[in-house]
Structure formats: structure tokens, C-alpha cells
Figure (tube, one colour):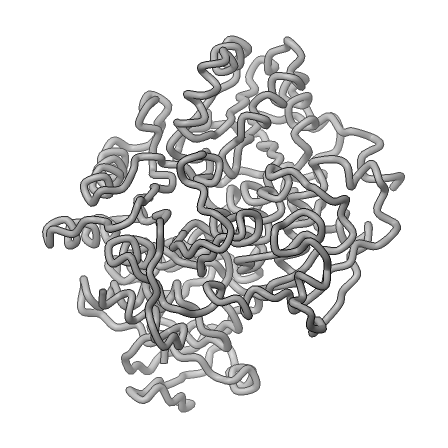
Length: 130
Length: 405
């Protein structure tokens, strides 16, 4: 588990990797990357599922700011560890007391998650459907 | 220290090691969370313990009149930039610290750098060692003077695991033109993702400006933190050296068709940026222009000015601008109608004159992020194509550059 916490929310499966900086508006949670196939969809309150993060090292700030604005993802599932997102979540917890759990799972497990499915992340970082 | 330890846990490091310098990206305003964070550090009495340069901020502190956004955001952006100085960081405000003679770590030195293009340049071109540090971690490492002993700080992780071989159908003239390199970077990022790749087949001894363009684009389309260019980068005198004597996990061939497709995808404007398409803006200098690039802008202008209604803006660092000023270059460029921006970049600060027409750029990174960040349609071209298009007011294409269609 890259960042602690537990949550139940609806999954949004990103069809391509997204850099939060330049890719998500922290004031709304919407995808703003012009080349991303899910541009315009909201990540706020969803469990974001993506194989890997991408791009800018400013994504930590964007995640923390989205938490402050109340528009952050509820949790994040990755297939590869990502330091930048983990640190964004750690700072958000330190400053605002809000947790965004980030869990790394095997790629084949990640592939089982369907868009729109309800997921639960528990305190041990285990993922269950519903 | 808690952040550094959290980073060490995320990277599964067993110990922390000392660094000799840091480059901090946290000074760019992304909302009040970024101010809340630095105030916590300043109020706690924190100071950096190693020489630390600063990345771009939200506005050009030397030319604040260029700001077109709301006053409150400018104030908060300026406050954040000032607060990082209060922690002992040097006010360099550039995304290309490697262009500053006093901020270039030596081969093998352990450092903590943030800003994706600076990270990849540091590892690949300087051969100094950093992981992909981001906002908050960068300043935490600068204060503690420590980093996790993991990832690209360790020799074994710097080995190329994928070889990108350039196909023989790429024209020699294209290999010899700056326009290839950002496009090659976009392909590298897509193909490599987060892996270390070795590019095989480029002419040896590539310039730092070209390698800068490769790295910046690769860190936009993928999460590349290091690449080798065989014959050009210091840990890749040979392909075997880049592979550290091992075998690659994969070898891929990159041909002209894939490069052309990547080039075309960098353009979002209707019509694909065909010759004659009217433009409103040309933005150069992402990452911040070097002196050689500023001289190239002057050379391509050849005494002309941008057409009426076209803004030609070049971003660079304040130290580079001072050097350009010493040789009269900055004054000559301004006299020819070139806007010079420092301390920030034209896709993160509201500085460009509003225009309904597309913006042209020679930067793979700018082309990648500007549509989402500042809502412009983009046309990608070489520096020569960009400058000549600015003079004409519409897209000019170099007909021979990419081979016969």
C-alpha cells in the first residue's frame, strides 16, 4: 500500500495513463488532458484505476490541492508503485487529515476491475468488489 | 524527514544516502495546498542543507507586466516563489538548471532533482543520479540532505532494459535536423513507459539541446527518468555499456512511419497544420531556451519581425537572459518583436496574447500540455518552421525535412 486508508467508491478505469498535472483540474476533478480518451469525465470521489501514472512531477501538488478542494479521487489503484502520487497523498493527509488510499496490485488483478463497478479498499490494502 | 522516509518505503529502500545538491519544483503555485505546505516548513524553521536551485514559478518576477491573469493568483504565485527563497533555495526559477554552470552535478554524483525534463537530463546527459522526485519530496530531500538508496541512485537500475533501434529508412537529413528530436522523445516515452531505454543508431556526439528535447518529450508521453543515446550520453559509449554487459528485455525498431505519426499527433489544430494555416502565436523555449537556441531564433528571423497580430514568445531562465543581455542578443531579439519570458513558462502562466488562432511550437512537451493547460490548439514544427511561420503569419513547412510523403 503506497498510501494508507480505507474507502468504498465507484471505479473509473482509465484507458490510458494520466498525469494529474496537466491532466486533471484540481478544482473540479475533471480530466482536462486534450489527448486523453476520457477527457471531461470526473475523477472526484471515484477510485481511479490505471496501470501506471505518467508524466509530470507536479502531480503530487495537484493531488493535494484536489483533496483541499474536496474534488480528489477517493482512492487510486495502480499496477506499478508511483512515488509522486504517494507523496501527494501523504501531504494531503498531513495538512488536511484526509486520506486517499493508494494500492499497488498485480496487473492481472487490475485488469479484472470494470468501469463503474463499486470497490472497497480496506485498511490492509485488500480490494473487494462491492 | 517523515516524507523522505515515506518515499523510502514507497521505493522499498533499505537506507538513506547523502546528496550534494537539489532542484526543487514545489515553488510553482497549484492552489492553496502548495502555500499551506511551505508555510508549515517556514514556520517550523526549516532550511535547506545542500545547494538548491528552484524550478519555474507561476509568474515572471522580472517582467510582471506580462501577466494577464487575475491579481490574486499572481500574488499567491509570487508568495510561494518567495517562501522557497526563505528556506534557503537559490532564485534560479528555471526548468533547465543544467544550463547553469554552477548547478551542474558531475558524473556519478547523488542529487535530488524534480521537474520531469530536468530529472531525465540529469540522469541521462550529466550522468548524475536522481530518482523521479516530485513536489514536496524535492524540498524534503533538500532539507534533510538525504534520499532513499533506491532506483536510479543505484548502478544496476541505470542499465538499459529496452533497445530502440532506428530503422534505415530515416533520412540522414532528418537525423541531422533538430526537428527530429522532440518527436523521437515522444516515441521513446510511448515505447519505454518508465523503463530505461537505449537509443541506437543516432549519429554520435549529439548536442545537449537535442538530448534536452528528447528527454522533455519522453517525460511527457511516458514516465521516462533516464535514457541512453549510444555514442552521446556518458553511460553509453557503446550499446554494450548502456546494457551494462547484459541482454535487453526487448528490442524495438523505430521507423519513419512511426515518427511521422507521432509528429502528426503533436498537432491538434484542424487541418493538421498544413502550409498556409493562419497562426496567432509561436511559443519556443520549453524547456527554457539555451543561448544556442536564442541565437538560432535570431538567425532564422534573419532581420525580419513577426507578422502583424502574431506573438513570438521565447521562454528562458533569468541567468540565461542575463548572459544573452551581455552579448546584446536579448536587446536585438526584443527590437525584432520577440517577447522574452523568464522564471515561468508560457503554458503555465497566462502570458500569451489571447488569439482564436492556433499556436505553433517546436517543443514536444509544450505541444503535449498546452491544449489542456491554456486551451489553445497546437501546431508542431521545427524551430526554423516556427520562426518562419511567425514572420509569414501562417504555417511554413520545410518540404524536404521528413522525406517524400
